[in-house]
Amino acid sequence: MNPDKHKVLVVDDEPIIRRILRHRLSIEGYQCQEAGSAEEAIAKLEEYEAELVVLDIKMPGKSGVQLLPEIKEKYPDTAVIMATAITDTETAIKCMREGAYDYLVKPFNLDEVSISAQRALEKRRLILENRAYQQHLEDMVLKRTAELRQAIEKIKQASLDTIHRLSRAAEYKDEDTGTHIKRMSYYSAIIARKMGLSDRQVENILYAAPMHDVGKIGIPDHILLKPGKLDKDEWEIMKQHAAIGAEILRGSDAEFIQVAETVAMTHHEKWDGSGYPKGLKGEEIPVEGRIVAIADVFDAMTSKRPYKEPLPVEESLKIIKESSGTHFDPAVVEAFFAVKDEILATKEKYKGG
Image (cartoon, rainbow, N blue to C red; front, side, top):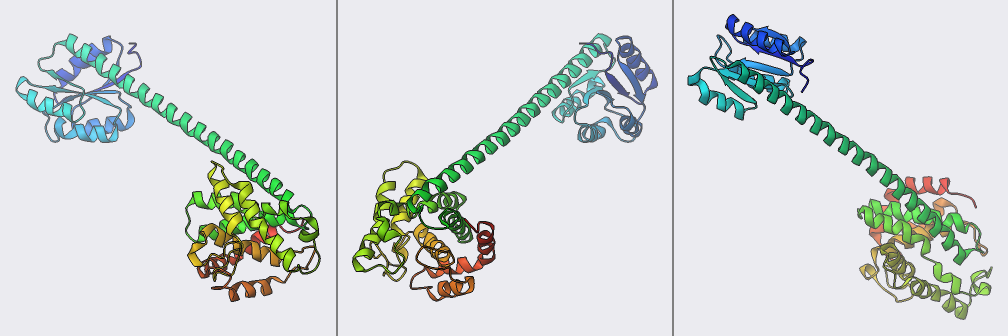
């Protein structure tokens, strides 16, 4: 070990001892300074970045025992060796438990002083290097974690974009279908978050909602695009899109596809049991279906379709409110109106074709 740049502070109330220690350590290349009291030692440490303190236990005023914890608190990386008379070894050992590296017994064996100083500084070096290495590892982990999160977010965005684009295939001939899918999926996520669903549930709904009408791919165009009201037989065929969509999505291991299957099957069920395809009532309807139902209906009412013009927002909101407890779950309606401004902002953001 090259001690040339190591700084040592010798703290002892006896000048002769300070001079002896300073002389020996200086010969070996250490930079040494002295302090004759605890107060002087603190003042020296404030301006002199000592790596090692040789500290006498018994001094007038504040003792070395009292000074040790102060040094370790203010300068935790400074190594401390205690100096003691033979009768003070028990106290010196106690000091080691409190952070001192070693103790030297007076009268000093200067070779032992040299060896103890070398070992104390070597231990200090290893501790600092290990700390720097640990910090480096932590920094690398943080960096890699941030990069991984960015990569995952890009994958999620790409996946969501793919879902939006593929979902458009089922409704491609509808006007405004692409932005409808985006809007209603974001509405659904906003409502789900307001209702206190977990982040994972919210994300699943965000990814599942665009696929709510995927079953329309199995509905003939003359029914799907009919400009007027469907007759009874046509309506029965149209209603099959819920079961068709669920069948298309059935059997996936992906959680959000499983949620999409549920949404496809249940987003036309109604709170009072008058919906389709199963006539489920109240909480028999999965919460994902109840949430997507209101998001889909609100956006459908306020969007242009081949068979209708959009309703004004205020009129649509009135219909939503009046449908609480019949078409829609009252708790979902409450959440919808609690985040109405965010939903309307989303509608404005994704307006148009």
